[in-house]
Length: 337
Image (cartoon, rainbow, N blue to C red):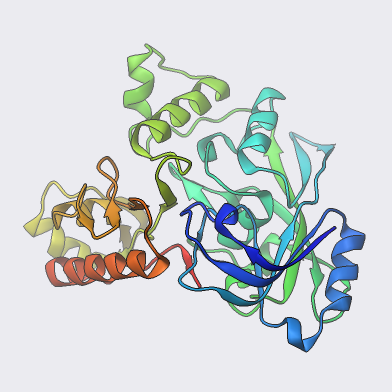
């Protein structure tokens, strides 16, 4: 177990923001996690639970304790038509996607190359290319911070929706996730209709991809349009794609007939926030040391030496312009501290 005071968080956020915390604790086992929460005092509060820091924007030093899981391990249980894959929260998400695809366990492939760690998938309900992790989460194991007791939550109990869960609402900072169990299939059903997947596969002359071919296509797409945080600090998609009523959608479609959109249900459509930001002229533009990525307007970047507040200032300007042009309030997906 690691326990540091006045600790730098620069290496724990992919924006590369310079900030410190009063205390940083990293545990490698469930027993250490339980020992940690039982030892916490009022002077250690508040708490901030982080994973890989790929969905985090620090605007100041954190005057409290940062908790990080380094719990590792994978185990499997085979069931009819599939497999339950139990993964420790400190594992890197894309390593698990690669491992499962290689073993012929399917359902994660569209979520390839999403940064971060396994524990965060159950908090954030990560998603990409028409898939969301809620569709494969079977069970979440956690430790209740107030009591140190082990808890088990079903998918239904977590109340997942688009980029949301109870871990972001009424359960926030109340539990440390230790393991997530995913229910995967041994039968591959490809989902190719979202984004540029088919176009990328066509380049390779692939009409009916294997899961590995689909994974590799998605990796190529992401690497082409998303910046490497090691070179240009970022947190991936900064904004959530707004879901609007059919009335609002039809109003916008009449004005912007080329507007991309995705059906949510019979009463709602999802409009890509990146497209709206691009229409407002922000793609590739900067405001001081913070900027909008030149290939994907959904991604805000640290151009070098930006503070968290520089990024927030850019975010606010973009939100105002989108609101003024489209009448839609777009919301950050990133956790702003």
